[in-house]
Image (tube, rainbow, N blue to C red; front, side, top):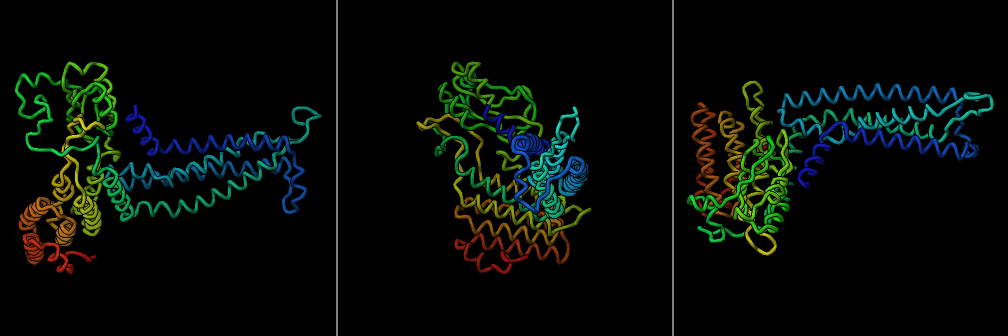
Length: 469
């Protein structure tokens, strides 16, 4: 249930209808409240304000009609501009970035403000009556306080319109798009590590805590002791409720091994996980474990760090395509990827073994490795950056900057393998002076990484490893 609610919350944040609907409903209640106050307090309070004059029924109707008509027109124009900006951004930067613009709070508030002002004006307009309407003894009624609030809402709408005119071009500026993705990636890394699901246990070779039935080399007898829990949905895993997995495994004294992680595609009948022992995984436990997975039609950044990395990679790859040929946009993506990977390099990544509060093994998750992150970020971009001298040099600069955050020799070896692979690609993709320049930089980085005091050598080479725009 928690996974479903979190997914629903994310869907509402990325919708253009939810916040405007809430604001329109609030405007309706505000209008009713103001009319109620006016009907009970009268207009005597205005006599002490010489600069404020009470409106007559005809003038009040004209004013509210003008406000309502203009607001719904501006709302339509605003919606058209927003959709045009979204279409441009998705076509220019990639369709997966559509959710970034749909979740923009500024656009939602702008649309909601105009619709709310329209609804408010319409409701208040309905309550105005002239003398004699509905009977000869019926007095005139003009909700003066409600009318004053309508004018305040108009001023707020004008301020929001000015904000919107500035906000839209700033929102689709490529550097701002990249910055928002990069900042969210770094924020998610900070929140996700070092702990993700349960309490990490230090893993050892041939760890005896892993049941024989859940080992890779399990024989047929042990394998038959696994209880597969199959998916009933088709789509992308958007969220895994880690606390629910631990709680169910503990309540039924199970050890489970995950087959998928957030961002993976599953179909009906896919084995989400396997539980051991089989006799304790009844239908109730299987249903509870299945509910810990939220499945949707698309990938989201709720738990999927790979999705945020892929967004930056996609922007950079499009920028380096022959039709666009914009290496400086790719450089910006590489800078943010480097900042995120440098953050990962300074962290202890959790093992795949996760325990409950009693330190009992409950979940065997997918391993989170530095190699996997580096390959996802830089391995996917190497084929594009290696064909461009500007992007190729920045690619090596960023790898050198990540190395400055590494203290683990194994992680340095990972970076060296990435530099070697990139060097081979650049050697075949570039020609002449461009190739010589990139290869020379790759060789210099490799020589620095081969030394025990590689950090000092990298810092001494700051003229080309850092500070280049």
